[in-house]
Length: 235
Image (cartoon, rainbow, N blue to C red):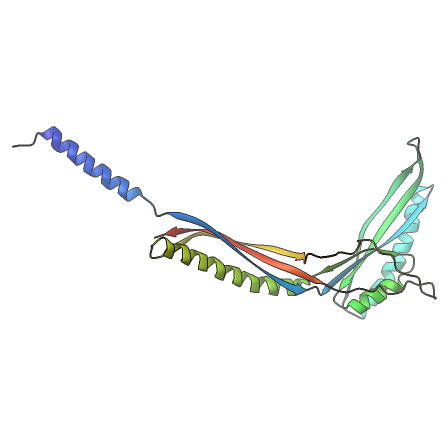
């Protein structure tokens, strides 16, 4: 029996349509993430020292703060020239003081000096020799060099874990291979190892010569993490 042209045309269109759908099908996509974390000793000490003044005249309070800070900065810079000690100034402000009626009855001023570096003994000794300043905060960190070195190692571990996950998923689905579609590396930086923490404000005891005695300090450890995430085509 001879097939009518309309039926041939319909069959041809159906065949082309199926072929087009098959061609448009893309391989399945999976999103994977992996992370790695290591603990490293904290080798960088940051000590923040402050000078505080108060009075009835804002300009006078500011002058007193500047004088004390300039003297301490000069002393700290002389210490820095002889050792691996970094010195910088922090925040400085003069703010009004109010009475119960909400009226200004004086001024409070504060300036900050920051000592930091790897030489722990030198930093604590220098802080103890600062006259007119008190320790307001002590913070342990990882030095920039150690952080960069550690992140490189942790990144390699995270990438290895991510590739292992991708290979395992491909095998579990009965497929032959995968292709990386998108990949991102996110260093999580550093964070303290969970545990007891000292109060952020510390006062140094005064020695017999009127200067502050060195702080008794002990470094801890920090965690360095890297997260790898991305998408793969499964084939």
